[in-house]
Image 1 (tube, rainbow, N blue to C red):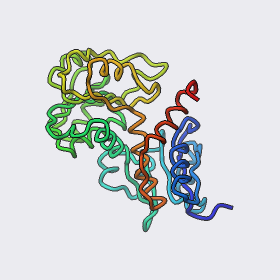
Image 2: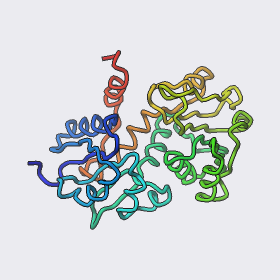
Image 3: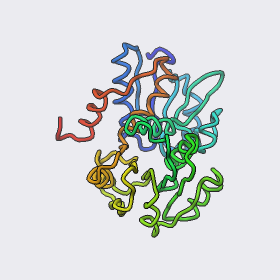
Image 4: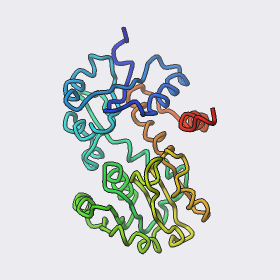
Length: 280
């Protein structure tokens, strides 16, 4: 039987696709920590009871993925970040069940690693999509002092809801005016599924972007999306979705196991090989 509070898990429905166990079990082994990180497939109608028995199941905490992030927020004591984003993806125990959203730091830390100094003189950012990932990205950009964020979504009312949530530095743009927005854009972020395997490509004319612009894509299957490929062809700095996935895992591991892990080239190579079986 597992010793109480020496393990963590990711809770989702479905959850088989998650690469989180690969990341966390790599770190557990690398740092010689006795523990395990598992997948837990939990349907929505059982999420409440599962969370309430998390400690009894031997878990020090958990990651939470779709469709449970909003429910996790409601069942825990969220920090300011999770509350602001409106979703929790990391749970841990500290005088009760606490929650945060590490997508924010995952996005920012990955940008810091891929484009050092990106926020030293950043004017306008354009964020595509208006879901949970977009909320985390916009919140993160605002905390770094970005002066203007234009949110563009196919359903304008969802972008308008984010403007109301985050305030006057967030503006709503039209999807059919995306290319028109790019001329003075310093950072373009795709949080939609466009460009993912099996999905249409994101139709954006990156020739409109200034030469100092940075392009970030949260999609990581494929590793190099058509958007990132086009950005690289123009010589622009880029940040990919795999980097964000790796960096967002750091916070949870630190909370559960008391060790801040490093995102190393070896770990990234392990994930790349898993995502691209032909390289194995």
